[in-house]
Length: 164
Image (cartoon, rainbow, N blue to C red; front, top):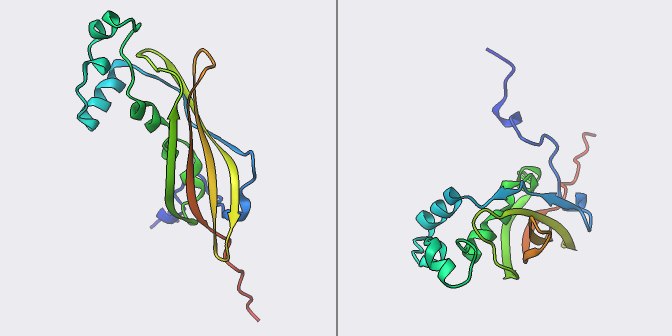
């Protein structure tokens, strides 16, 4: 028998509650180069077979330098689970409430993207609060290619019980 406890096997041992978030706080998601494997994985998952996403000669004939990433293919890289955010709220997360996004510039095969989430709004309720995150994706040319919003319902810190 060992002292191992599966409940303590966490990426981030210190859990956070609604009160622990700060406006302007950023959660960086690892960068990723949009390789042909990423394109193939998205095609498999989405079922999208339009040639603008999978036929480089089709793209070049239309003036594009390479395969064009589907907007959703770029968006999925803002999934909070790709970074630390969901590990911080394993005990306090109630749900993912809302998402929106705008696709501002094209993303092509071999581009490298840099996703991040930033706390932009905190609305406290009695037992929970909403945390609004601005989602951004920049490319290697420092261009903002995607901007959006994600909203989460997070529990407030539980009241400490006294042992009197």
